[in-house]
Each structure stands twice: as C-alpha cells, then as structure tokens.
Length: 160
Image (cartoon, rainbow, N blue to C red):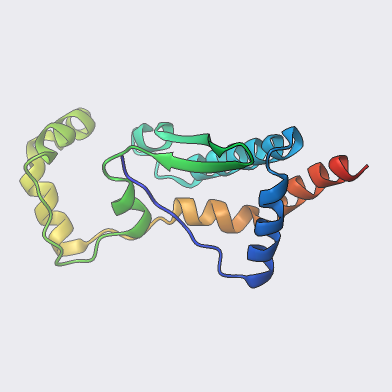
C-alpha cells in the first residue's frame, strides 16, 4: 500500500486537534470524522488524474479505533503509481520498467500505445518527467474550512 501523509503545521490547529482528541470517543465526533474523510475522499477522486479511472477508484477512506478514546482517520490509495502522480517525477529519474509492460498494454493498448511497453514509458518519463498533480494536497487545502465547520457543527451538538 502507498501512504501519502500531510502534517498540520499551524499551532492553533494542532491545539484544537489535541483538545478534540479528548472528545473523539463521542459518537458526534466519529460522525464528524466520517463526514470529513468522505469529503476529502470525494475531492481527491475529483482531482486525481482520470486516465482510465483506476487511480480515482482506488482512493478510499477508513477510520481505525486505536484505543477507547482515540480514532485515526485516513484517506489513502493502494495504487502503485499514486505517489508519482501526486508528487511528480523529475526528468532524469530512472524508473524500474520491469513491471510496467503489463500496465502499459492493459491501459494503453486500446489507443495503440501498447507497443510502447514499460521500457518506452520509462524512457519517456526519464526525458520528460511527470508534472505533479497534487490531488490529495488540493483536496485537503480546498476543504480545510469546510472540515473545520463540520467539526464545529458536531461540537455544538455536544455542548447543547
């Protein structure tokens, strides 16, 4: 599985997250986390490259209960090329083309590029590189305020 993670740098947001951590055992907070993860998942799917839909369809979300009062939410993909799409590939980067042949034939065969093969794709990427798409990053940046509003609304429910 490929994991892409982002760290929260803002001190106020970190403090808020620490306070929220104590409330996470509440059903309202689990609901807020679920709504936030589904929002990020759908946005990451929207921003992901849509070549054949494999990457966007591989984006999932999950909540893991760590302890009684702690949950961990993730939006992730198990796509082997997600990191290259998210972060890009600089020109001059040598790629392992051994496993690319089947992928190229399966995904590019119908448009006549199957003969390119894994070596051809790796050579093209070596010369041109791959521009980063930042689909996870865009989803997070675009929805920070909405996620805060989701948690705020559920906190109001708890406090009422």
